[in-house]
Length: 132
Image (cartoon, helix red, strand yellow):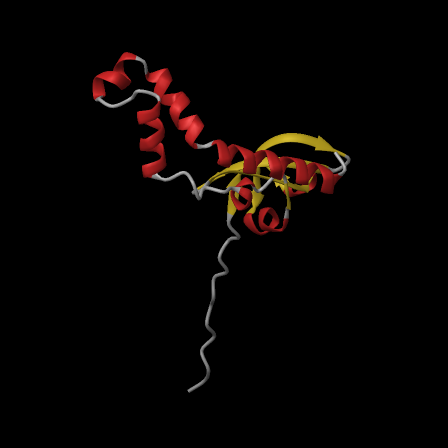
């Protein structure tokens, strides 16, 4: 018996639908939705065909935007600290929060001051590194 030739069908490369945000000098800033939210990268403009781009091209793209998550300090954003701040702002009951939800928002913002501070620090450091 002779060897049988096996026909192997090549899988089509996976593509993702992208939104072109901007194009300059052959480079395109594209955006698409992932399971973790929006992503943006720079890719060669010619790699975008009919509003799609190969996943391997997107994976190799130059990231756009600050990776905020790696700079966040959420150590003080605990349920206990938010509760403490709600009490300090007079939010003790369901009636209290329903009477003026903006007070609850201010209380949560106060509990997140350190978080906001870490975002501002990251923004300053990023501007210094990028020269802008």
